Image (cartoon, rainbow, N blue to C red; front, side, top):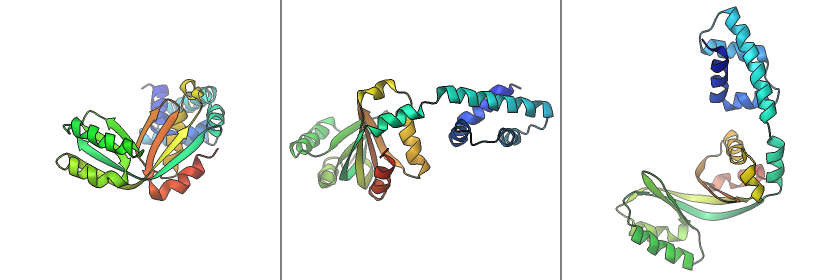
Length: 209
């Protein structure tokens, strides 16, 4: 039994515990007992090994911690929000000719149009005023629709390209406050998040560093 790998795997699978360990908020003995219990470990020798493994892992986390750098970058960012957004999830076989028609109409009106192409579906992020038009164009291909959404765009400096963990930090921050992202995408310095309209005020509060 490789106790070190076991401890590392447990902490990897529990990011909230890992975060507390990194901040020095975790009692090593309590953490070791928790890991031992989850793997039915009763040997004193193995428990001591877990204790050592947790202490070493904390040191590694401390060396890798760049939270201050991330928060500084985010404090210099700008936030933009666009309300009355909806998403349409389409079958992968949806007509791209019709998608181009819809895109042309929406861009002519200078409204939001974004396309995310996946392996099993296509997601359109558009202004709600074009929802009826989209339904008419894609009636045979619509799998799912979400309405009453908001597009929040976080505009950072180009330093985001060389600062690891920025997007993960944002996502974990929202998740800790029970805010779900319907969709997310990025384009260079822009991190774009689609959230429920009711969560907008909380999102804006959390992203002001």
